[in-house]
Length: 277
Picture 1 (cartoon, rainbow, N blue to C red):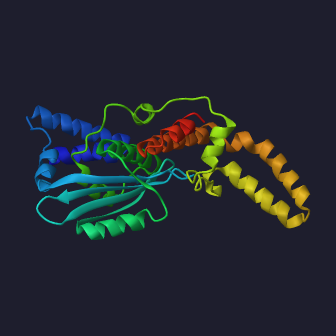
Picture 2: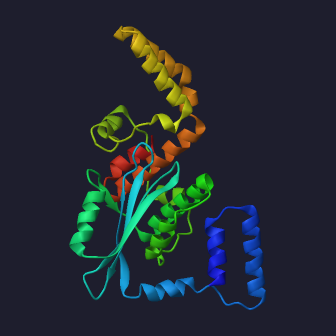
Picture 3: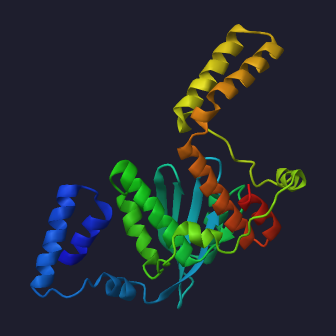
C-alpha cells in the first residue's frame, strides 16, 4: 500500500520537493526488501468477472474537444461498468463520470445521449489509454492536479496496456501523404467533418482583440463595404499573431487525429486528404 501511494504521488503530483521525497522513500522501501507494487493484482481480482468491450470516441472539434467512453461487460449477468471522459488538447482532462452497474439498454441510452448529434467511432483500448495518458500529462502541466473522480474511474481500464509508440507515430502509421487538389478540398467541404471547427475568443489573446476591434468598428460604422475592408486588413495585420506556432501545432494534431479516425471508419481517401493538408 505504501509503495502504491508513493507511485500515485509520482504519477499525479508535480511538485519537485514532494516528488524527490517520494522517490527517496521508494528507494528505501526497495532496499528494505519491500515486494513489488500489487496494484495490478488488486484490480485484476476486482474486475475478474468482466472484460473490456466497447470503447468509443467522438471526432475532435475546433477546440480539440473529444469525448471517450470505456466500458466493461460482466460475464455472468446483464451488467455494464462504464466511464466517460471529456478532454481536449488545450487543458487536458475536462470532466468525467461513470456507472458501476447498469443494464445494456441503459448503457446504450447513455452512449446515444453522450454522442448526441456527433459521430462515435470505435477505437482500441491501447489507443484510448494513450490519449487519456496524454490528457493527464497536459492537465498536470496546466493545473498541477488531476481530478479524484477521474483517478477512480480510470481503473476500469487497468488492463489496457500503453503502446510503445508515441501517439503521433500511431496515428500516422496507416496514412499517406498525397498531392491534394482543389477538387479534393471541395470533397471535404461537402462533408460534415469540419462543421464544428471554430475558434473561441479565449483560445488566443490576439484573436480576442481582433474580434473586439471588429465589434467596435461595426458599432460605429454602418457601411458594409467599409466594414468588410476593415476586417480584411485587420486579419492580414494580425494573422501571424493569431495563427502562431502553438496554435499551428494544435491544428496539426487535430487534423492528424481526425484523419486517423476517419480512416478507422473506412474513408481512406478522405483520411489521406486531411492528412495532407
